[in-house]
Length: 428
Image (tube, rainbow, N blue to C red; front, top):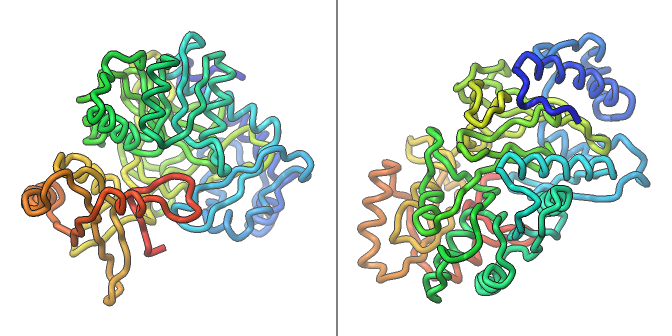
């Protein structure tokens, strides 16, 4: 695979336009869904010559994937050797079928991600994420670490005591985990006087949750970790559908684009490309996928991108932290909110031990919410401080229900879901 991230934006554009032609030809020959789309919109792949020409093609939506899931399959069923699925956060899960080539591409993706974060074969990688329930990230990180040649500890999430025992015994240098799980691990270590600063861990690859604010400084969740554990934190962004990750380097200035594996666009509400630094919806075209390739897939995620070269030497563009998901925007008592900003405010309140946000439609068909909160002290003592903090940070104070830690964590684990979620959206 050609290494383009250190060349120039012009060289990357030329390389991607050649890859785009191959991608379009493959879809026109093998994809029932895109054959129908090209035919119904009178699109000839040969007429799409440049990245700018992509706007001539309609976007692919999550609804397309749900309603015509298997029409995206481009190979005979006997060529599929792995079935993954989306988490179903915004509705029904979507099946993603992978060939051997796709699995190797997935391994390459995470190899490049590990290398971006400065991880080498001398490291021992402790995987605190699920490798079951059709979870793509688990198998991707496992295969990437194998291709890198690093040592692997395959534990999965949960059981803080066991995680700390493994860290003490096997001395991993890198953790891969959801940031809020790391916060819980830190709390458990304090409870049992476990000295995290004396462990072998030097880096944490954080998945699934924002680690940074819009200005790329650590957000409340990142600060909680950094304040209690002297490790290097690396934020990532990925999705099952795009089978590609944006990972930070050590300078922490956004997730690096892998131009050999993905074409992306950031589009305004009218479908027009935005300029660097302007927010829009991320739309992706993953390259080199055989099983279920996509073209101009709308992720629903709102972000911006940066074009200036990174201090690490890479010239490929970088993605900002995700501002929010378009379908998860909340209009609460006249205030527009995205879940990441709300969760960041809650994470910054030390009085809160854990929480779950529940959003729903009320009797007036308006957005409403309840925050289920567990506190470490007396509710009457903690409540005024929590309300004051929410008012100052968010300018709103939603309905609060104080409950036990066990109940909060029970709410976070929805039936059939493979990972806990602090944000429950009953509007979908």
